[in-house]
Image 1: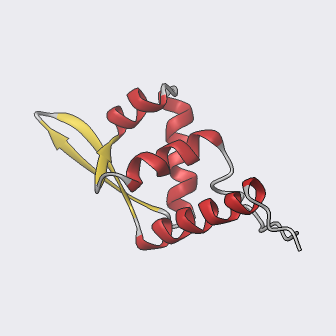
Image 2: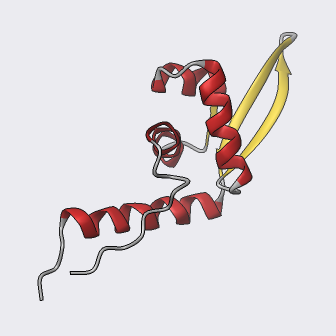
Length: 98
């Protein structure tokens, strides 16, 4: 049996949830991600920045009606990392026996 290494960046419940949401939509506002993950603003901000530092997300800040707006987009590198993570996880759930 061979188990693939799990990406430590994605092996966090909140970061994995954010990536999963962004795999199904081109972009999402911070407030939407906060609502869907039920995370605190502070914790979500820290985890999103870790994903940004790993180049899995792009973050843009703008204003809408004088209110700050943070938009997160998954990068090509992020999509590839997520897909590899899912494949690695499947090696644990569906191990091939010799």
